[in-house]
Length: 354
Ligand code: PMP
Image (cartoon, rainbow, N blue to C red; front, side):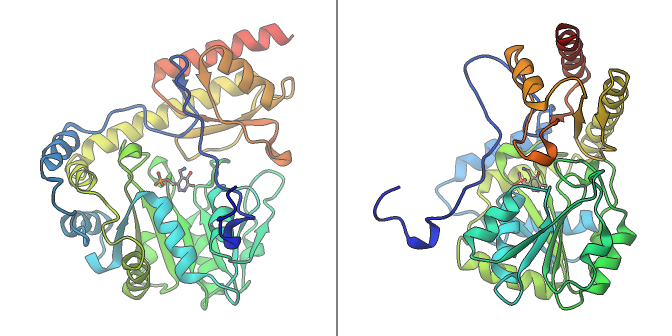
């Protein structure tokens, strides 16, 4: 730390992204990326846009916002496009949290929430999950806090039905409830249809997972137009050109390939169900994931040891050094071939540890 670093940030522990090692070729199942390339229209549109980067990108993302709104069945002024969904989550902490609106989220959830809270000097409460990693909805009723719910949750993969989120929305009418739907396209119910019923609902989604655009950084939020206007105030006070021109073009291209996206999601869901079945046969405890990852633990091998042994074999998964989930690994669902390689490696490791 330099002697110049602001006192505001001296206590800040930044988010740790999943490792991206380059020492050998790994099967990468650690950052929940898509195993499929972006659709050809996206790549071509981005390459065309790259020829005009002497110009600023459209700060309003007009065409992309229009198409995203159409996809979601809402109006363009109910949508805000951002640089990954991480950016809209940060905007939400900036816009809707303060000392009289502290944040609340699960104790086991997306690791960026406490970082955003600390960054923005927002007090926060971590609400324990049930021992089986499900959310106890009662813990969220009438709590007078700005609530962040990843649905499906990460790294557990477990989803809440929309009706239960509705209970939380109804019982906290004076606080914003942010529903982070980064993984919703892999089998959970979206809350977007509720945005006109609840003016305190903000739904966030991403192009990183189901639309194979993690490296392009594109996310968005959907909510009533007043919430979106507040988020725009924050956006225009930080970075008006938050979505670059190549990414806007790629996003527009991707939205013209919805069939490709749908097919990829279907393949991931099939590969997930296959992987869960096979892991269970090997004696793993596996959560009921509705995402593009599985969350699994084995009574005979510690999570950190399995992670390290897989890494030696060229397979990267994500292990979290947190007591409640120490036994588990979060494994991204890849192609069927990648899943076969993973299962082969796990079988060999289990054999070894007998
Ligand atoms: N929410 C959750 C629950 C996530 O796991 C992630 C991905 N790390 C994000 C949001 C952010 O994704 P992105 O910024 O790539 O849209």
